[in-house]
Length: 122
Image (cartoon, rainbow, N blue to C red):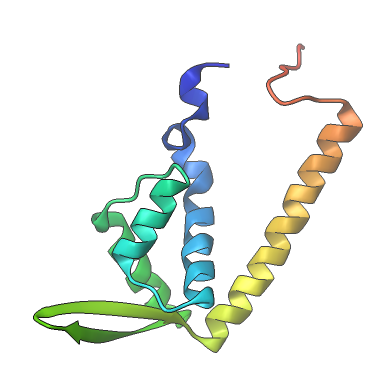
């Protein structure tokens, strides 16, 4: 396995919707803002730019999954996001689906005797 295969950016397309779910999950746990989420996902090994994060938050808000309000502290304004009731419901349903899919992958791998990093030969 190449070292680059451990880098989440290599398979960004596989993770992008999971990042959406993570953002929604984060907003379900506590009020949050874009930079806070960017920093948190960075600790998990993902790089998200403000140019990715803020449109993602706006899209989740447009879908009715988040709501936001502007909070001023001194001369600084910050947009705080919270999950709506619909967002919490969607997050719970998505978490169940992801769990089912991951369990199915695990069961399939265990059944086939596959190990991480092992390549099947045709």
